[in-house]
Length: 223
Image (cartoon, rainbow, N blue to C red; front, side):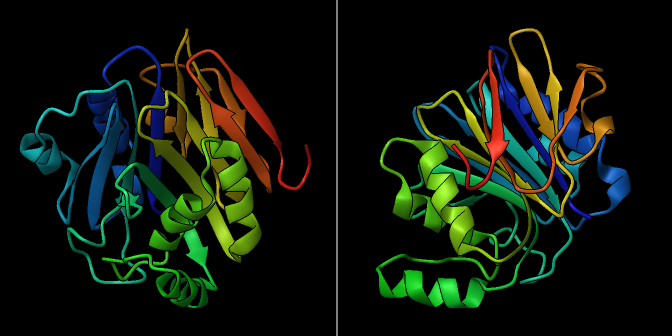
């Protein structure tokens, strides 16, 4: 099982994300990466260990971000296949645990619509679907994306210039760590214990928007 983390608050996200990923190394992985959102999405990822990523990564400024440790399933371990994955604009980044069963069909459809894919992963279709549906409302775009995909997922999404994270879960663990004017997201509790011991467990088909001051969760398909 891969590791997945997210942070939104007032602190710099990069060191928090890397520390959280280090806490998930026991799960095993062959690549890792982070994306930090500010006016743009800046990423650093590769087929290396978290400690090596800490040394190699340039400073990524921003207080909202996501991170991932990956076991390769679709596509070999590589810098290109490592998460996070971006959309065509480079303004949407996604990390995902699980398997998208219909990704080949979705990839063909999106390619015919003009989307450009660079990885071999199933996850990249999620970022492009969100791009397709995004009209300024992340929750609406994530909702539409979930209606298209088939399979299992724990998803965290960040968008440039938005101090919020979109989350969704189906058949794959995802938790929210509740802080003081900051919130954390992870695939397992140990990732966030350096920062909080207040935890909310998401249930299957949950979808939500997380900011530094709010947690909005509902069931996919409901208002």
